[in-house]
Length: 387
Image 1 (cartoon, rainbow, N blue to C red):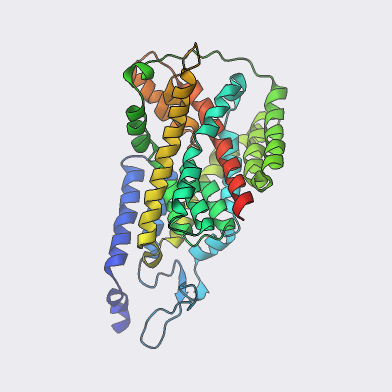
Image 2 (image 1 turned 180 degrees about the vertical axis):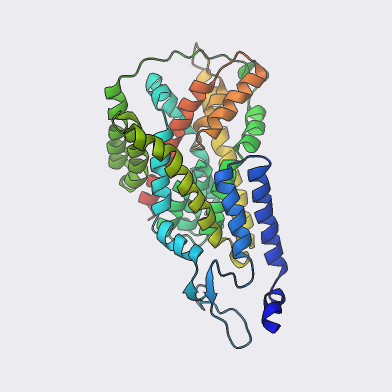
């Protein structure tokens, strides 16, 4: 009977708070349909790992009084045996395998046609990374530089890149960084519209941009991922794995001889890895690690980065309009973050809400895929500077 009630004796208010956080993530996934493939396993995994002596993490080492033993230097919980979630973490995230495999699926989803039709859209992808470096500077006031750099990359709204950068830089705050990056990706439809409306006028939001798409040759589509990988590798060698896996996925899509593999990468591979990624990230969401002042600060800085990345793209478009005869709808600048394709769709829907004949989808998606490239290159540059 003592064994039966032992877990209840070790239940704390911190565990309950994490259950509530897990429940909120599940609610957002099901009720609001915000990235359900990611948030549902993340929310459920959060509840799993915050059950006292959870077997999902492993068999804890305890002293004679039943207290959980921790490493005296790092404070990490000590395990006698490793549970399935920690096994998945060590096999798929600690070595960056899951994020890189996911990039193959993302690359296979991306159509670079709108960017190739209008290459100037790529500059918006670069402009929308402004918040990363601004946040990194701000975070350096509170954290060591490797941690500050890892926190700054949250602004890219690119979960896999955030994981790889934080892992390679050895950040102590990997759980908070992972959760912030993926949470803000899912919250794009909530965070971006108020920022865009605050920075634009009604007249600017009504600007129409007819799509003048060009037929892009198959040769160009095949060469593009190869050339981008080479250029990124020369500029930021540490970005080669990130950019290379993304572009390899796109090459599978565009080569024309691997249609079945491309479809598998886009659907089965991407969804499967995302599910494993979500529930594996949850292994790091133990109450003792997550409910800290540092975590709240990181979430705040991540939101700051996200907002200023959005603002950077919008303000850059407004700046260009000072010199252009054919005006750009500044809303498309906000799609330069890496949250593909959510951000592009948000901008398109905002355009239709202002004018039901204003179709911005191809422009916003073009900027969005540019942001995907820019974010992984930004991650590579940060690794080159701080690794």
